[in-house]
Image (cartoon, rainbow, N blue to C red; front, side):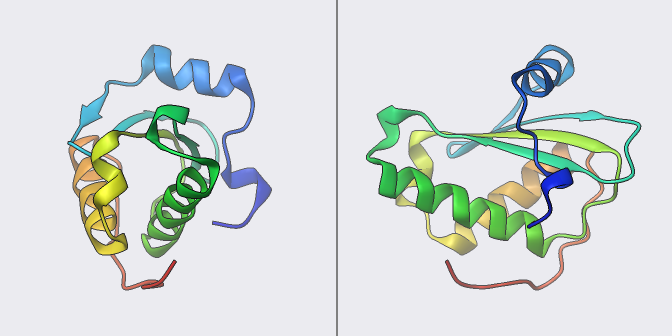
Length: 119
C-alpha cells in the first residue's frame, strides 16, 4: 500500500467511516469498513499515545500496512483500523491473521495472498 489514493487522510473521511461503519473487534484491533464508489480501497490507521512511544506506534502501523498490502482487497471500500493494547505484544503474523479475520467479518472481500513477511 504505497499509493496516495489508497490512504484515508482527511478527518472528514475518517468521520464518515466512524459514522457509517459497524465496528468489528478483536483483542488487538478494531476494524470499521464502509463501501464506497471508488475504484480502489482506502485504509486509515489510528494508534493512541497510550500504546507506547512513537517508535512502537509507527512499528505497529508499518506492520498493519504491510499486512494490508499482502491481501488482495477489492476496490470500493473505506476501512479504518484502530490499534488496541493487545497489538503491542503481537508479532507480524499474529496481527496479519487477526486483520484478515476481522476484514472477513466486516464483509470486506480479501484474497489472503502470501505477502511480505517482515517489518
